Image (cartoon, rainbow, N blue to C red; front, side):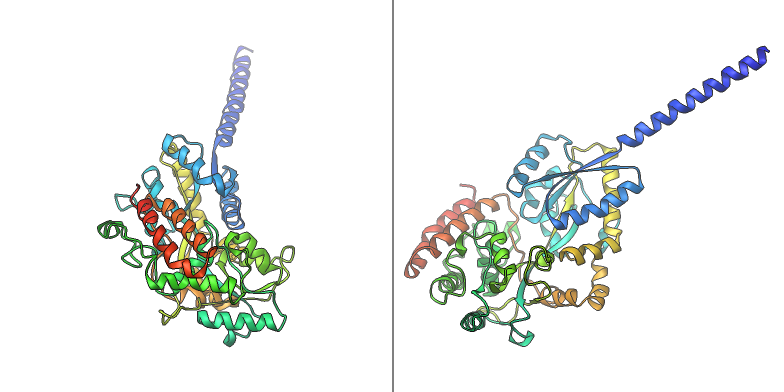
Length: 433
């Protein structure tokens, strides 16, 4: 009887221990959580969907923390510099790649990075020549046209043709505007800057240089008073005021305002990241579904062949994150890089080119839209990167935007004077004065 009681007590104790240990294991499993700070955007949501699939399969809770673009950089920078672990993974962009480099974990060891395009990674190397990013999608400037209005052979290939074809379509009553694109601060790429590079020009000297040491050696001298730059400002002044192919209020437009006009069917051409292709073909938002084509940039008088830009949006891991969660985050990002089906689905839903470039030939062979994008952008040779990568770049961008809007809202004959007056402000911004 005593032996039986002992056995029963042992069984009960073992059962209790098993329950407790199982509960403890479950609690530990539930504690496995990764928080991602990002900007609410279809591309980022599609990338997070791939991560979420992995997280569910591995008992990890993935918490999404969306933020507005206007506050994202400031808020995340404060988190990084304080060394806190508020986020385990954050959205990373080439615009601020060099600002964050010393606060980010290196990512060279993430499996799948061997399949990433190296060109767009320039901004993400730290001082030890280690990468600090895992790409989520390529962000590539894309010239979009209404293929129901112009045949492929009629798509403008020069600035002059962009004006003449736009005016013809307007005269025929097919569109209200020829070209519409973002132009205000943080949207300069979609008007001023694509035409600047397409006219063989740049913001600083040496032209097209992105080596910070060489820029410093040239004393960050602005190139905005050069003839090649004056020509593109005059082109946009004329597009708005003389040729009237662009809306008079375009100097205040961001990409959203420009996209809305294009999706309403009121413009024939625009240029924006390919990641908006999904919006253009969303029947809930767009009147031009299935009518949008892609082509290389038209070129200015100083260029002979099209250029492009090819950068990335990516993910990064703050250094302040505990080691165990860093390891988990890298496993998740590796799964995202290896998810071929998820990346193809991201492209189909959003127009975001996959970060695994080994998928591109397969996609181009099977998907006519990706084949068009590949020809429009990836088959062209970029002459430079679409931003500068020194700490003062945001201030330079602001000084440039102020100059351009002042020139475009004034008299045409005053454009050279306005550019000259603002050149020193751009120089002071670049040198931190």
